[in-house]
Length: 290
Image 1 (cartoon, rainbow, N blue to C red):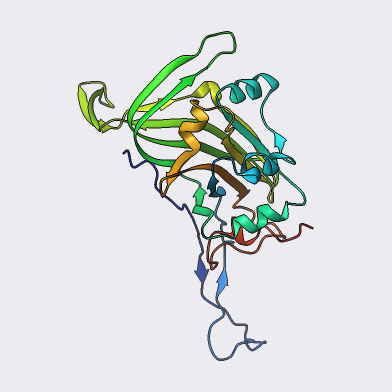
Image 2 (image 1 turned 180 degrees about the vertical axis):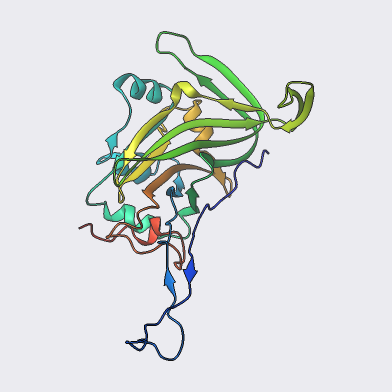
């Protein structure tokens, strides 16, 4: 598959220093050596930090299928929500006091998997895998409420959600999400060269995008975006994205996303990133907000 799903951490720092000076009528404070003064402040890393984790339980699990969504605020316009639902998808934001069971499952090594932390500075988007390679994928797709469903069949698929985060205001981050499916074998394509004088070979895996089902929402430092499958809607894109088999048993998944601005620094209620057993989206879920 196309290796566009990598992690890149962008950072920049700059510092300068000059020598010391002394006055004949006043001895230097530090008589043991020169005083070094910085002429420029340290430039902080700019961008957005995005954390994600996948929650997984057997299909029909009451918490993942119903209770988790009880306090989630729906995202998108009313029309977008209806179209989302018609394709077996649901999305919402958890804010404020978090359900204790949500905190517990985030800290579970068995039920919270594929934890990731990425910094978005130079790169603008990334695909978060939601299901592994599948031999065959079939579902009914509706991209327009005034249209008709169409049958979709792919071989050798890998499903995910493309995320594009960007700063929105002082502390919030707007996250744009779009379902995507890679399918088939790597193919060679001829594309025009940059100078337009010829063609250049490119090897890519075919990609199915669904911009009609894209949405965006603004997240605060301790808010969680949930994207999952409505199991009452089988044979849909939602099932293709979030249904898997584990040890011969069908399971359902929910993608959890949290984001914050990397500059200026961490929010007061979140400790510095790194040094934890898993990304802090799990370790910090139970911390009270201020």
